[in-house]
Image (cartoon, rainbow, N blue to C red; front, side, top):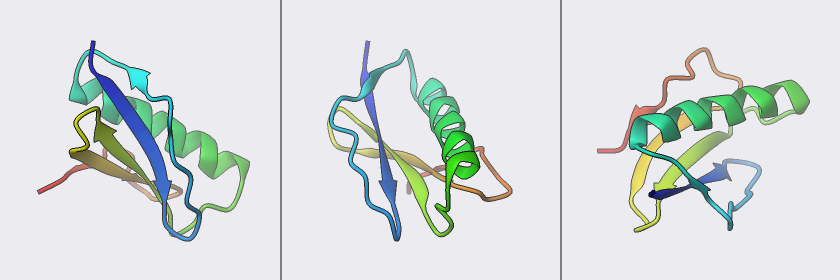
Length: 76
C-alpha cells in the first residue's frame, strides 16, 4: 500500500516523517481534510495548509487549515 505524508506548511512548519499507508490518493485527500479539521479545532493554524506528498516525493494536493474548503486541490 502506498505511503502518504501530511506536512503542515505556512507560518507553522511541521514535517510528517512517518507517513500513513493508504490505498489511493483520494483516501490521502480525505485524511488531509481530517487532519486540517483537527488542527483548526486545536489551535491557530490560520494561513497554513496540509501538504499531501506521496512516497516518491510528488505533491498530491493541499488542504487549507481553517478554510471553507476541505476538499483539497490537486497539484498541477
